[in-house]
Image 1 (cartoon, rainbow, N blue to C red):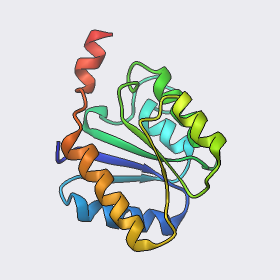
Image 2 (cartoon, helix red, strand yellow; image 1 turned 180 degrees about the vertical axis):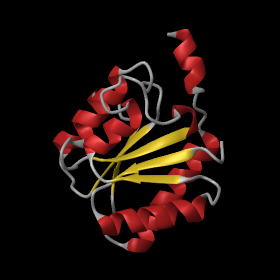
Image 3 (cartoon, rainbow, N blue to C red; image 1 turned 120 degrees about the vertical axis):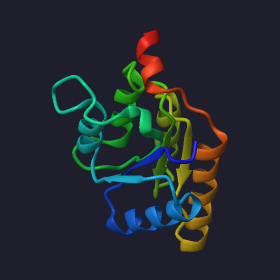
Image 4 (cartoon, rainbow, N blue to C red; image 1 turned 90 degrees about the vertical axis):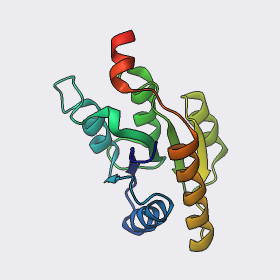
Length: 152
């Protein structure tokens, strides 16, 4: 699956830089798309009111979605992803700095594939992102979005 893009929705500029750096070291051929808030993510995935995706969903391999985002929360974005036949198949990993049990429970209740708490130590964070990218891009298989649309 190398070559599939990774969508990172993260509002903290420092975490964006660290995440992209770690993901690029895990997979140099997988494009990393960075968005800064939940509304940007919804517009990217579903278009801005037109009802059709604004990007080619076939290129996505995994979404790393911060729980706490401005405009629209990560949990709300996850809810939209799971509610749409266009994206319900898309692997979503919730990423957060906080350790709130309620967020963990709600993320899984809404259909998250994984929930990661960001370590404070950069080396641990980079190692975690490398493992995550390698699993979701090389081991895990995702359906072709076009095939999903033709079935539904």
